[in-house]
Amino acid sequence: PIILRSRTPSVLIQLHNKIYGILYGVRLNQANVTLSLLLLHRLRRYISLIHAHWYFEEALFVALALAHKVSQDCTLRNSDWAFLAGIETRVFNALELKFLYHVQWNMLVSPKEWCLWVPIQAKIQRSLQMLDRGVAPICSRL
Image (cartoon, rainbow, N blue to C red; front, side, top):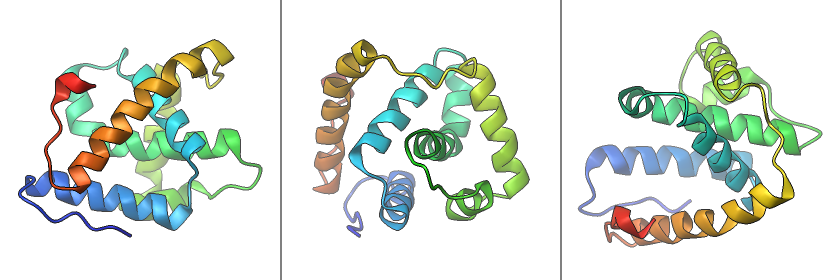
């Protein structure tokens, strides 16, 4: 995996490396990542900015797990996802239930919603690539 080393704040470096480790370890494809970002985007409508900041990392891991569960026949158990995320299984289970509750258990993505989301995800991906190169992306580019 690519390990980020730059002048980026250490919290971002740690988060980037942890996420990349999970993506690499689970071998999620781009569709899974895109779906997880879309689910995370849905979640932001239901929680405050403060809570989103506090739980972003955990919410991202739950979104990745849910996207993987929705799109794959054979998937990891919650205990595996919890281990990869570095949290207890019972905490992961509770976060998954909260996530599903806040998105009203709606995991369906219509073709129209998917087509609207893919260009947004491409912009996010470009920003992450800039971060990999040590260039801080400007939020307004998203």
